[in-house]
Image (tube, rainbow, N blue to C red; front, side):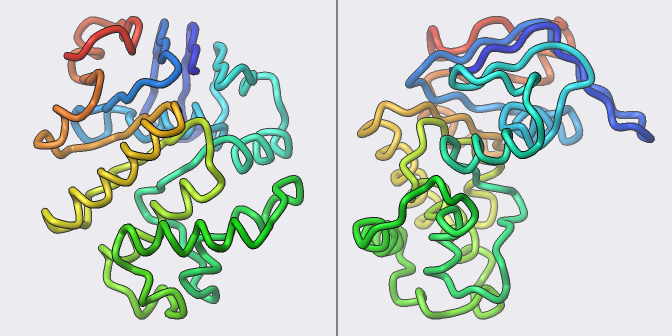
Length: 230
């Protein structure tokens, strides 16, 4: 699902840099990235999804070469094949909850929108406990409710890869379990791949593999991901 070779990345006017000799994430596995703040976990998700481009090296996501594509191509690929849960949610304030969930269909003309898609959005919202808020706007929601809207939007297009940046960071224990159940149920039912950045060590037992960025920076190699739990 994800193949990375000789990756390096740095921001043009910053001190941060990320170097990754090799990383493989197999199809259908769940992987958690953990480690200190500022170690590059979110940056790696953005590189894998094509939000950012590497300074050097190769990234192939779901058979698609991120490194060799232009911005428009990466955007279309991301909308049609990846479900993203951003740390800052990235909800549009002028759209209600239902329209925010269905936003990928507005942004990508190649995604056909049908009544089934609307029904699926409503069912997902019901599963995470926000069906009664579909007509509300983001400013009328709590942080936890915004988080759940972002999760619904990530899976509504039925992507083959889920990338989540702190998907439970603003949730109480009950809602944390509910959101994780939705993400893992989706992964298990569809055979998709699920990669998450998290600081919540209480949830790590649910993942097939845990990659600790602290160890990565000590060893300078992340190896192959997806073979066994750790």
